[in-house]
Amino acid sequence: MELAKKSGYQFMLSTEAFNEIASVLRELEAATRAELTFFCDANGIPITHSGKVNDSDLASISTLTAANFAATREIAKTLGEDEGFQFLFLEGKERNMYFGNIGFDYLLTIVFSKSVALGMLRIYANRAVKQLAKILQHAHEKE
View (cartoon, rainbow, N blue to C red):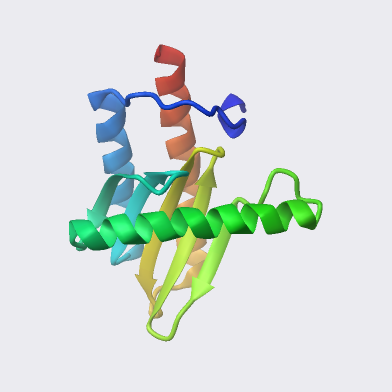
């Protein structure tokens, strides 16, 4: 898939693509009972989210998420996984986070309660990543 290649350039999402991405996040939040889902670029710039969070927290979490994924990508390269890891799971005392890499340029992050079944969340997250990749691929082709 072309999207998986590091593009190295920024582009503007159309209103249609932005709305489609926001819809995927809302559906994912509802299906998984996630506290927060958000979509950001690899630099940690938030694009859209679903769930309750204030803007300053979202900006901080997005930046730290991107840095975490960048570090993990370097670990993957060291281990011979040249394309990096597509998903990353962090387990906390009360909340968990699940990250999905969409190409090299975008990240999906899901914050959810410990009461949410991880297997179910993974199924929905994998589906959402595929949907987001399609939306972005289509947006790149239209550009």
